[in-house]
Image (cartoon, rainbow over all chains, first blue to last red; front, side, top):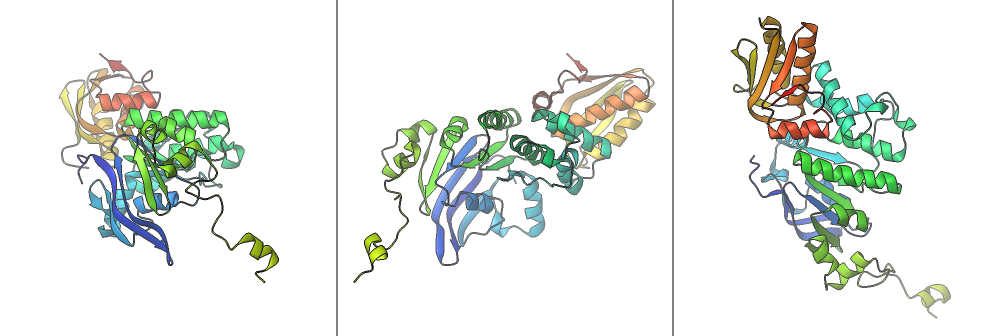
Length: 269
Length: 103
């Protein structure tokens, strides 16, 4: 592995199917190292599927998924296990262990993946919780935390092993404006201060555009467009315009394809 | 522990961290550092980080562990030549005011 590749993650000609339905057809995506890259698109456009392909939880039907230049579908199980240690994921739900307190939730990956002595595990847990502003919550159980606090604890856990690549799956969903602002600041801070490559999958346009150095818009099995947030805002492409401006109807129709409404209600005869 | 990650005595009371400080090398460097700090004749110990090649959060935890050992042994400890990478982790983790940094 080399850290010299300009792109931390690259999808080349990736197709993915669910049953007979195409989710992605021949998609190319390049995630620049050390930057925040947003992947945006309407709900159901396969954004989370993209993250799963990048984390090798799913295999593409065809194409390459390169992380630090290594093609994930070709790696052995043990190489994949090592590779995953370099990748942190903040799941949409937070996914904290409900029967473990905050300390043990953050300590969990350190206990599973390292042989560090207990005092060093404690140092690192405290450092990560201090970074997200929740060191004082160390003894609380997940059900004693607000939604925003849960997500910050999950973030502390996601960075416990100092990943090179940090993936955020819909980090802003269900967050109040203050919690949202805190998350935006943390994502940017961790990216810039620690040199992490950040991938933010989201349909929250304003927040994602505000922190992303580069954006991809996906939909209809394709990459509809990519560029800096400013470039995409000024795009002439009607599909990108529809998404960036939040228009209900356009090239992506408001209505899911259906039979004729009159026929449906009154019968065809 | 990789062969080139060590803590060694540079002079009496001056310990030098060398190489990569990460999850693979951390536990051994902690034990070795503890022995050297306890064995040092000097009551003021300096840990020099100029030869640190790369460090994760483990490197900061090592410095904290050495501080605890020195305190138990009734010695003082200072940290010298903290690399930029370690300084950034220290900053994000709120450790800059806690680490005994020497200019």
